[in-house]
Amino acid sequence: MNKFVKVLAMLMALMLCVTLTACAGKQGNGDAAVNYSLGLTTDGRYDGVNLKDYVTLGQYTGIQYDESTLTVKEEDIQKKIDSIMSSHTYKEDVTDRAVEDGDTLNIDYVGKVDGVEFEGGSTKGAGTEVTIGVTSYIDDFLEQLIGHKPGETFDINVTFPDSYPNNPDLAGKEATFTVTINKIIVTHTFELTDDFVMENLNKDYGYTSVENMRETIAKDLRESQVTTALMETIFKNCTVSEVPQKLVDNEVSNVIKQLKFSALQYSLDYTTLMSYYYGVDSEEAFRTKYEEDIRNSISQYMTLLAIAEQENLIATEQNVKDYFKAEKDADDISSYVEQYGYGYIYRAVTINNVGEFLTAQNPAPSYTEISEIIVPAVTDNGADANETDTEGPAA
Image 1 (tube, rainbow, N blue to C red):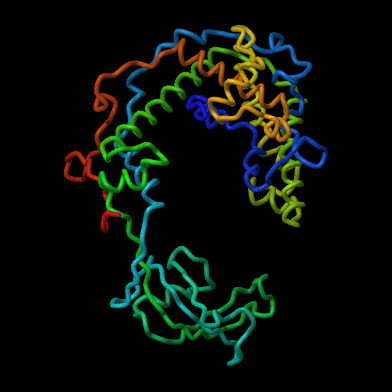
Image 2 (image 1 turned 180 degrees about the vertical axis):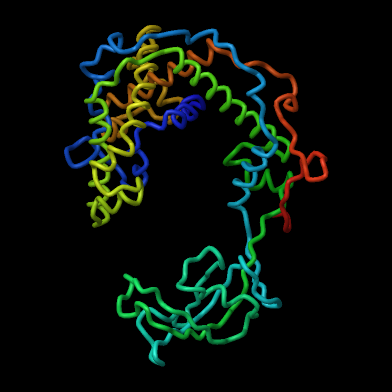
């Protein structure tokens, strides 16, 4: 996908229903599932909406950037590196020291109330992995493991909470657990070297060395900053007098349909999924919490589509073919049409056209050396900190 569109999608935070797409599989455009093209014409415009009645275009070309805001912090580069490296770890079993707060452990236990084992109160020798201070257990169960060593078996005493929905029969009761600490598990990150980068990161990210990795991340972060600054300025310069309520209703409808469709697939109540993904338990509560965000996002789409109409950038059939060939290496788009509909696809390609146009019309300030856009991190002693904090053997 075009980098501009990736960044723009994050900025606009539109189409909340897409959150669930990955777990729902192919959706189609039937009544039972999401109609991504709901309210759109086949060429991706809002059906029955004359954008000129709502959108007043201001300056969207020749934008001047405040270069002081377009610098990348060394800390942010390191955060991205750390995020990538968090997927490249190995575990070490430790058995020669006492358990400390924050440790990850493998344990077994058998729980008893009044000397009698109860259902669900035992690992049955299978072992379970827990992290002190992270894993949620009753009372101070895990904290009582601190100071003990792997290989030890001992009893701990806990009290179940007065309200315990998992097993109401245990609510408020005292229990004794016989615990065996099998091992402490320490996770290490592989050492970040040029060889590691080529062997493990080149295929997915295109990095060729540690230095190239840092420079590429810095450039990507800078590009995101430029896009953010550009879009914020354009959305400020261009005003939308009103967002038609039917456009908001269409988006809300898509979210609810998506939830119901996914719930049907997984034999769940859709309000359960709504609570999990959105933190609300009814359509009314969803509207109260998210309708303004949806309205703002649609307002931004309206602005971009108005620019597309002004600059003759509405996607054509050839644009769509070229886009899918370039981005998906696909000559046949019928599967995409079946899932998303023509309106959604044409709008996506139109937004891509607008993105390329705005990027060309509002070039980012140039720089010669990557160091010009990076703000070095400062350590406690005032020195620059540019070393990657990783440990362990090179892979």
